[in-house]
Image 1 (cartoon, rainbow over the protein chains, first blue to last red):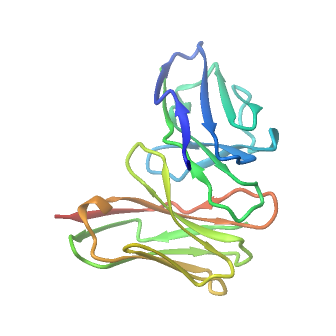
Image 2: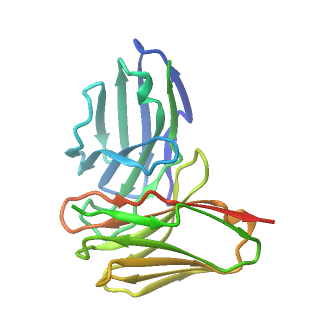
Length: 114
Length: 112
């Protein structure tokens, strides 16, 4: 099973809402990633977790809060977002951060902030 | 700082044509290079992964080559089909605890 799942597929939220994005993989991967992708742009890395610990935070605003409750799950908690945060949010996983393994991506969550 | 460039940015070809997508990178110290496909509004699908010690990888109608010393990779698609229409991204992985560095992609349209 080489699948990364993400829920929800679509999310519309107001600027005062609190919501969460969820990502799951059962490939035994120990590295998990959050990316943000705007239309017609490549994915931009937000966070990297290695062995359930945050190893990279690419200077992401605190209104985005990642969480890795166990080796299979990765959450992204959203609070007080801005309309410019509307984007496709992609989760990915790989064997290890510094490995030569393929990164597997989920289908993404399309987020719209009103 | 590693930079990845993909040329052309967009490409339109008739069905059945063979085509080449190009990817170049500025720092040759890479672990591997990966080609992805992305359909509009969807996630990324890994097509081919070439390790730094390899010269090419093949999967079906796809062939990816890597010339690390010159900082180049090509993705060759044989006998293109309308279903190949998508954005193709290349990304490099560098040593250490570093993330993938993506190019901006090539938008491919195969016309029936």
